[in-house]
Amino acid sequence: MEYTRLGRSGLSVSRLVLGTMNFGPETSEKDSHLIMDRALDLGINFFDTANVYGARLGEGVTEQIIGRWFAGGDGRRERTILATKAYLPTGDWPNDSRLSALHIRRACDASLRRLGTDYIDLYQMHHVDRDTPWDEIWEAFQVLRQQGKVIYFGSSNFAGWHLAQAQEAARSRHFLGLISEQSIYNLMTRWIELEVLPAARHYGLGVIPWSPLHGGVLGGVLRKQREGGASRGNSGRSVDVLAKNGETIEAYENLCADLGEHPAHVGLAWLLAQEGVTGPIIGPRTVAQLEGALRALNVSLDPATLARLDELFPPPGTNGGRPAPEAYAW
Image (tube, rainbow, N blue to C red):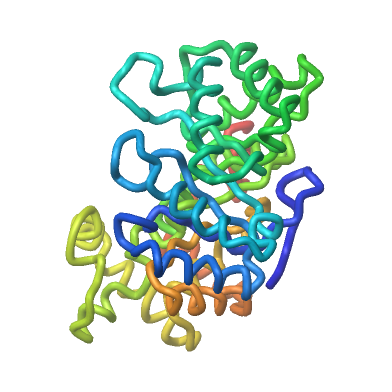
């Protein structure tokens, strides 16, 4: 396993992040525990979850599954860098969501109970709260750190401007602030290259891409359809994506075939090659899917292949050969 620092912090994390959203709704608790066991065996030490995962409002089903796994002992909690999130509704009352100091306190305590631990390594804001002052948010987070309940803080789904607001407010309080930003990022969704990636690099934040294969579309969906196998491309948003981008996806899969690599591994390897990316979140539903994802760490994409991928999936905001945001500063 390869490891890197999470942003400008001294925290060492694996370059693949175990996503747990499927634990409960898609994967049984027994199989979820097997996946986490195998992840540690493989050296994956960075686990990502959220207080709303599990598809039942206010219950935190996924956090409970992880908590019962931690209870198995054997040093698994100490070997795991645990990341969870708060913001989305956990109930129907007015203060059961967002980032007021009250909700932050309640949400953190509830996550700690479900996870069966006395601290969270990385506590992430699931979304930006445009109505709560940054002084209130950072004061609440400072209290959590002083209490020993949280060590580091991160964001998710922030714009570049939000990162700047957050970091400058933290700086005014002489507080470390954010060390990471979790955002959708893949070959088909490259919008964060416009402002978020430059801002994250400037402030020293590690970037953690979610949906690295665009809901499975970049995971060999056309090949699976031809072979008659189960495919996420047959339902949900993937149907519309394929209808609009079928030729591009086919060209991508052909490129991967020429490389002798699975499309999913190429998509993950491309993210790993991007400056500022800590590691993509993989969301295996089985141990076999988890083990297969490790191949991405050994896929090396040469300049010609990277250029071809840019042709198939053009980066946004280039102007005169300059990348964003410098492309605007003509």
